[in-house]
Length: 519
Image (tube, rainbow, N blue to C red; front, side, top):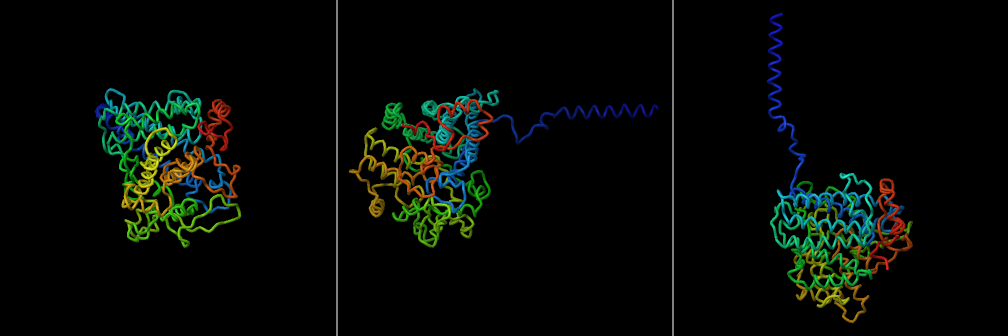
């Protein structure tokens, strides 16, 4: 008995020591080194930007390009986007993706406003990113949750839908504040910024250029036309107060520098689209045949030493850059000729393979310099600002090409550029009507907006330019869809505010114009 008693006492002592030892490092041992509870602004920015561009590029390829006749699927079925016919479920992806990233951008601003991590540059950048993503949301759907959005953790599970007019007015306030915050030039961690590598001055230029994009978008609404035009004039003529993107190197782009299949910044098309799906759609006649007829450098093989690929990674097919007419009727299957190369078709030569858009480093475009030039050309034509519409128009064309073909001169005064526009017969026509000048500007802007999220679609809805051919197979009465449906689950998750939104904006249909489209 005595021996047993001693054994029990000894065992208890060992257990006591064990528990003491465990307790000593309990917190350190049980802290997950990967899923951290606290973070800083520099840790959130790059993932948010990459995720946003992933979503933008996905729907640019499968939705915008089909609506805007960049590509045309070879399909005899229902639910084809190029026939203005798509299912309600198309709405879910962008809504979900964009709202998730807005949480991250807001967290960046919250963290950058705390005393221990105070940084006015991260605050300004987050405001620019919020304005960018919220503008995409409202331009896609119309009235959306805004002031009460993403407040679920605070118990607000059924947010109200703000009117688009009110959203735009607040986006302008965000961009004004961002411009002021970035004036100080407070440094940020370069590795946290895959767009400008820590160059705060360039972020400020992008924010003001985005400001012009959004002001121009609502400029046709009589109730805000005067104030929008006045602000456009103030920004354009504001000099150092409102610096703007001044060349292609200052364009807001995220360069996909990662190796195919690995690294933090890999083109989303590499892992997100099967190679057979990437090359499946034919090039739309409107898109490819303009480039062909202009002898455009962007599809010129000789620019790359006859390597078998051009800057846009387009295979001409057997019929020398012939396209598929968009909106063709069911039962009439067209012949596919030109199409985008997929990376596996060019894999034998790495340098050539990377010029497939599926691997290209250049596809992560947020806003480019050429777009800004066409915004300014329109502003001059409409008498909002002074200057030469022809100069802005030419600079837009030159830099849209130079972005993809660096050997092409960005200088619109160069002999190579003048030779190109003369041969393509796209010289500026100063005697054209306002509508004629808008067609000239927006035809070229259409090509400058290639791969830029949904901007081709937004601008067509705003202006009606460029004039697109209408196929006999179009649905929706042959009228370009004006918006996406609200996600179906919103009707059950937020029924009261959903009903109020459609009572105010109009039926939840693709034919219902958003605020800035209405007369």
